[in-house]
Length: 288
Image (cartoon, rainbow, N blue to C red; front, side, top):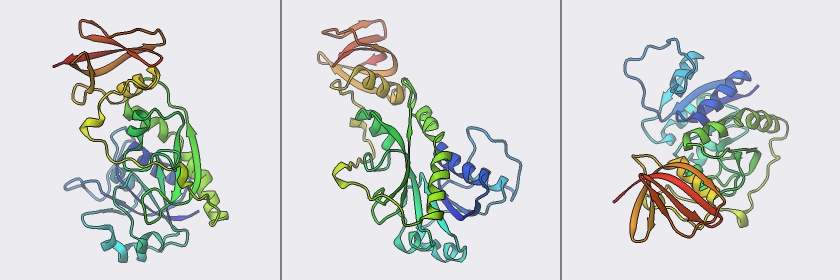
């Protein structure tokens, strides 16, 4: 078993990772989280495992010390050093770990990234995998290096992502691969800590956080990929922009796609059916 410091925020990926470590009897020395602490929370209280569970709640349930980060991580170096961890594991954590921290444990520090690195580096790989029509989804367990998402790969797991998922559902699907990812990855770290794969920079891609203009439809994609992008991100509050015939339609829900070729968009009440490279898509909309 390993003595591990866990650093992350309350997402399905990070929660699944911490649950998996606990289930396999790893020793979690401390949780460092960027979540906002609950005011006046008692030191220990009963918690039910639910979808809205936080890392803090899970840590309290298992008597894991929880440190809420309210200053740069480098300021916690004395505290981290005093824990004498074998390994630091991060998941869904936006701060860059300074080298004084990620080189501290004997096994270093590793991160769980929701893409098959070196493709889709960056802070929101799920969005860009939908936006850029990713064919092969998965997770990477990699060493933390000076630059985000560039460290050597320890293990990867491929994931099947069904059509028509919301982005939150996609993340839950990815999270199901974390127990296997950690089981294989941590076993390798313990037995052969120097065995890892250098990322191929010729295949690397990095994307920034999406901007409002990125929520615009590009119909050069296939019908299936366009439909999945709409399903993943289109809502009444975050509609996907689709422009045709000098009109702007704001797509709020994907309905269906098929491979019947049509030449122009058709409207029926609040549903638009429009052509893609290899078929057509129907979606609910409102327009300007």
